[in-house]
Amino acid sequence: MDYDIKDKGLAEKGRLRVEWAKQSMPVLRLIAERFAKEKPLAGIRMSACLHVTTETAALAQTLKAGGADVRICASNPLSTQDDVAAFLSICEGIPTFAIKGEDKQTYYKHINQALEHQPQVTMDDGADVVGLLHSERKELLKNVIGGTEETTTGVIRLRSMAEKGVLQYPIVAVNDADTKHLFDNRYGTGQSTLDGIIRSTNRLIAGSNFVVSGYGWCGRGVAMRASGMGAKVIITEIDPLRALEAVMDGYQVMSMEKAAPIGDFFCTLTGDIHVLRGEHFDVMKDGAIVCNSGHFNVEIDLDALKEMSTSVRMIRDFVDEFSLKNGRRVYVLGEGRLINLAAAEGHPSSVMDMSFANQALCSEYMVKNYASLTKQVYRVPLDIDREIARLKLASMGVIIDTLTAEQDKYLHSWEMGT
Image (cartoon, rainbow, N blue to C red):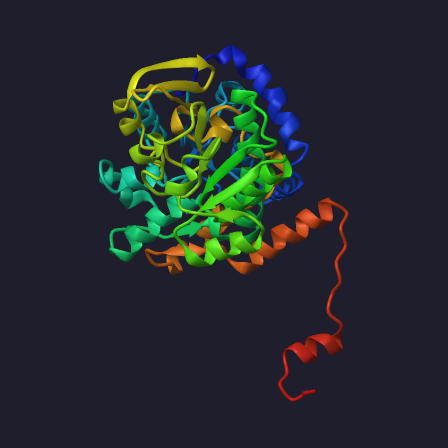
């Protein structure tokens, strides 16, 4: 079987870690049981470009149970868990192309290897597969019937493609599902980002000035967790509505120009380029810690930082020390890549249970409905979103109310006034 992994001897360790993760993924487990009986993806060739983690392995098993022919590659050079890649390739027979720390050339080689079986459905986290198909591998587009996209950054790229008339097949924006972004982005990113920062630095969060750039759902999650650990949280934003919300949530809000000299920790979560630039590094405290939890490593202008530095060294795992010409030091975590996956294990499996339930069900939806869809980016159907929420609540033993006939009639009528 074709695969490219670090060490196949890690497969047993990966198997145990996947087993542990799946204990907290009851929704995906139920979907896998149904898929195994109904085979809704029978014969469908799928290429999945995702963070290769224990939770992704559970999703891959679910897709395989549904009859899909799955190939997997990494969606970030530092996010792969090598034991999981070994488990998928050796134990599950799912061709996996991912090695933690792979260089850019290997990263794109792996994406191309994941496309070699000429996929009919793509599954992306950041839209790199879609981008490659629409640029260097156009000959494969004739086979593709649809796809799904996991993250905010990817959805932004895909909507741009659709608006410009470039997108060649329909894609469901899994990130837009309430059961994804309200939980994965907020609670998952919040906890795992702080986990990555603490694992890589072992620095105290309490009492620090913690600058969060971007107050979307991911930024909200990080701000919440940093505040909960005793940090004085500062928000930087370009959107007045989000900035106002951050003020109402009790945080200081200011420009990065004002935050740069006082911050102890900086975390970017905007999805945009060069949020932290030379003029910011130049005024940072000696020992300022900088990291990113947005999808791509473009939010921190690392080239500018290198030009301002007299030396760069790795002082501990996932921590690069930049000694500036002004005598101060700035520490960059995880090469500016997703710190929650570079230095930690990514989101907790109970959160990814809902995200990957969306991936599985939206893949089924695409296979069943692609013929009636146009070359656009679609929201997750509301019935899928609600069913995942219902299953998650049931797995937690939570019972909610239902409308009485009288209440339902009232909500659907206009005749009853005060």
